[in-house]
Length: 418
Image 1 (cartoon, rainbow, N blue to C red):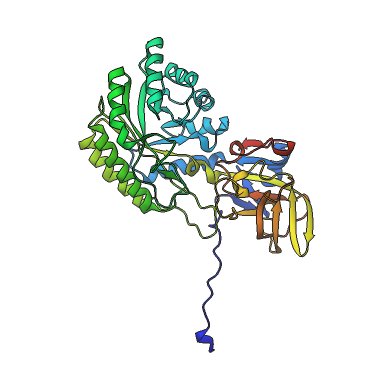
Image 2: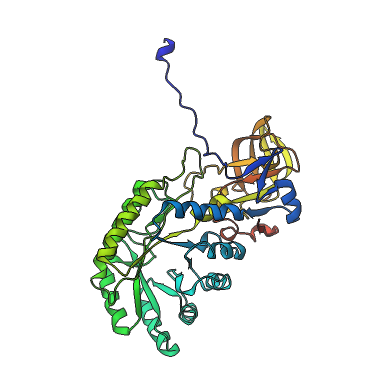
């Protein structure tokens, strides 16, 4: 076979550059501090660190691209750390919560009550009562909630502010996690919404609009645009049966960030153009409606890192293992056990040797007695030593609060905002 006939081998996919953090004298800089100094300030490892400047920059970048009339809401389930929520409450237009616990954090952070919405398929009666008393918007997810809210409203003398969370008759294509379309525990099936709206009107609840959330973690702008268009069309259709004009239309979010090799950052330009067209339509077809985009990981995911220290470096039959003091108990997502079908590596580096030329293929594993405790599987990393700091990027969302911190009795993780 001639050289020209040899098959062309494609280079393996690589992670998108993690350029949001600078490097000084070989160390990552988080919130203006070199990593080793930050670790000393925190006092122990493992820890999560969230960069305040990056949170502000992400919101500013989004506002610069999207139409100014679009309201931005932060879905705090992505990262409910009170200090983070406090920063976000001052940057975005509203906060979306999913429990009474999150509601307390949002209100304590000074979020505008008029712009706080409460979603979730299993709201307890006590939570509904708290939300009505607080005056926040409740996203109704079942007929049960309508009846409960009617009784609570009568008792408190406050008509509950409500929107209907709709389970649409379509899915968000290319979504990492589909939360609408087909049978779902979320929202009310679109075909049942007219009946629900009639009951809301009969009981005198304060109807304000609709909430549609087809899915999350999508990196395809065309898929997000299609979901937004379909969501708008569905809301417009349902508005004909609403007991009051639509004032609130949450089109969901779904904006993804690149976690795995081969993934690229989301192109916002087509989404901005699409939203501009929907705003033009809404001005004529639903003139009282405010269009809302609800985002979680897109706001905070890239602003955070998880930092864990190498306790031991060992070689087993030729494979290098970096045994660290934290793992899936603190960062379930990075271990691949939070929704991944086929495990892939998050971007990882040795944070105090970030620009080292000496490199090796190694696996970073936590201290737990399970082979699932894996933070990096056979990745090319800067050559590490005991005491070095392993850094997992893209860790600002679904980290500490989404992990089984009590598993095997290890100490919990520290979170800091810098």
